[in-house]
Amino acid sequence: MKQVCQFLKDAGTYYLATMDGDQPRVRPFGTAHIFEDKLYIQTGKGKAVAKQINANSKVEICAMKGDEWIRIAGTLILDDRVEAQESMLDDYPSLRKMYTTGPDGNTAVYYFKDAMAMIYSFSHAPVVIKF
Image (cartoon, rainbow, N blue to C red; front, top):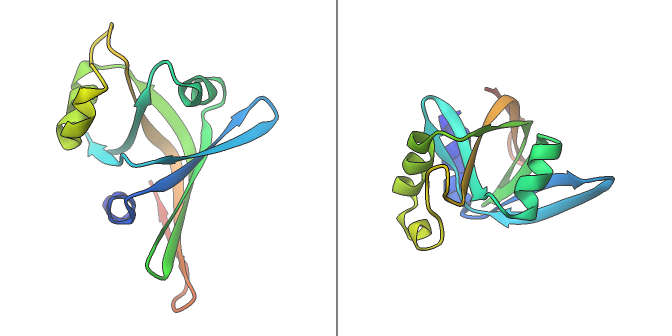
């Protein structure tokens, strides 16, 4: 899992795919964080992506770094604890200008459950990481 998180951080931008009814939606993201041995991502509570994840928590991520790319499939679980939100914003302090924590805050953090990442390259066999 640490290798997956580091890949996403090194890539800088990854693309998160969700479902909006029967229509797939893909958008760029940039947060990847390990808290309590789980891989977390972050968004705003009021955003369409949060509503899509809450309606169908199965997502995929894709990112590219150099000559490698990663695909991550799994289920996202909302963690509404302030500690999880604060940990994410501590790792990404620039987000504190836009996001607040707590029950009345606008931060939503999700962790992966039953996830599988595959790192691909034209120069090596795929690497499979389950977490």
